[in-house]
Image (cartoon, rainbow, N blue to C red):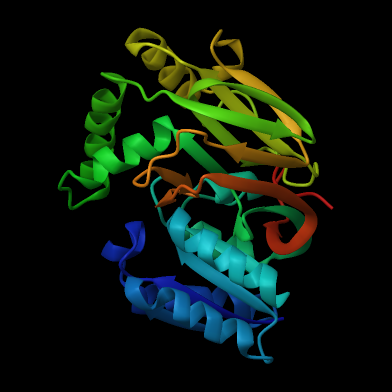
Length: 306
């Protein structure tokens, strides 16, 4: 296999890593496994262009992307459209897609695991044509992300503290919005505080991410209008992985989800794989089974399965 590694030097763990030494580690790991690889650290503002250029180069079979969830999501969309195989180096705070793939969260161990991985197919989802690998959400999470972006932080720990402060601010007045939600042609309408549509259903006992990425269905999670206390319990249960026992959380599955917002506001936002995006009056979400080729560690018990 001939691969290229594109590393976001401004992202998460990589920001404080000796990238020359890390590229040497990647090169050695792949060489020892019988592969060839080029390694290119680039700035955050250049990452998407670098990924697209790599995807267009016929000499590379696989693209290894290093960075946080935003970088990995962008890389997945590019790999999906180009037909290239995607490898993930988890260098962010949450690393949710990497967890689904069973990747080691230590970046040195991840590089070694990728060199000795196998190619499998996993599902990918789209929201109005935009690919995503973790989830599309409206309500509580976009409010939290907006609150966090208004705060200043310079480190991973600082981001965690900012996230806690942003969560408490959001929960002081949980959002409430009228939505007409259609799951595989069946429509329901009510006021919600949160809706999350995931690329495959969440697993249990951990943060909200899928244990498998080959089930061919979206996980749809929603909570009706809730108050501060209920919002705190729901947020805690999501972090602890005990959300399935929360009385306010509803779990459903579908191949296609359509969300319509009769009282849509111009400044409304959604979150796709951790990134704030404008919320449209109507959004169509679907899953495309087996459409993304990924590198999965040989020792991974969970993650994508063929």
